[in-house]
Amino acid sequence: MQPTNILIIEDDEIVAKTIERVLRGDEFKVNLANSGVEGLQIAHRLIPDLVILDVIMPGMDGYAVCREMRADPILEDVPILFLTAKSKDEDKIVGFKAGADDYLVKPFNIDELLLRIRAILRRVRRNVVLK
Image (cartoon, rainbow, N blue to C red; front, side, top):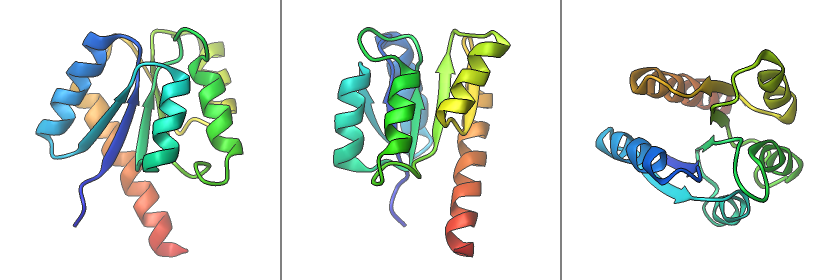
């Protein structure tokens, strides 16, 4: 079975590297992007199994990245988990309206992140089998 390919789009290098280290230790294949534009380029090239996406980034924010992915026939079905410091209910609503599958607020528990990733992937795989 091929490893699960996860793209992390996060401008904070410490956060990105921490998540990468944990996921690689859990046998995921991880790619990093430090901006929304770079993340979209990598997503088009790799078609990841899941995207972990920050909201607050220079240039193109995560909400815009999410909306672009949902409008793109190649990327529209890629699951997106927002991981962000934006914690207000209205921020979460904007994220889900943009097309997020899940939303986790920083600071976060790494075990919860792993469980959410697995839950999303389980739902996606179940839906692929049912189609």
